[in-house]
Length: 165
Image (tube, rainbow, N blue to C red; front, side, top):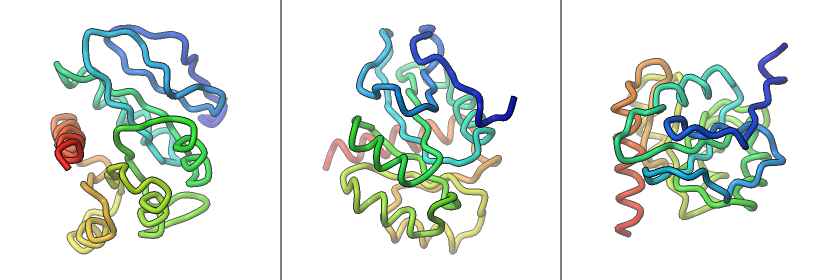
């Protein structure tokens, strides 16, 4: 079975586990019951391995929040999901099948101007980070080098700063 054939059942929910969906027939506005607050994350990432890794890093990492992931593998799919549901934050890879580079940030900010965007990229240099922030990204995470505490901290601070504006 290939990674693209994996389909997780969105109806199965455990209090300790965030939801993680990868198919388009799921309604993003229904949330599981929990004592924690939920942060809904639209992850635009074409690599299921990277998506699972980030989900695993955040799983149970916060005593206050559970992270509720919805995965889009293309920008087109991300736009469709944004039209159907509400998200607190988007985590965006810059190398997608239908778009790449800073154009990904620009397109997402044009489609959903109030949605905070965090870039999740394998590129680890100051120039790339500065360029992403200039284009409207609110944070920049490097794949494989970010700890769960750092990821959680960036997501929470981006959401809090957006709520204050």
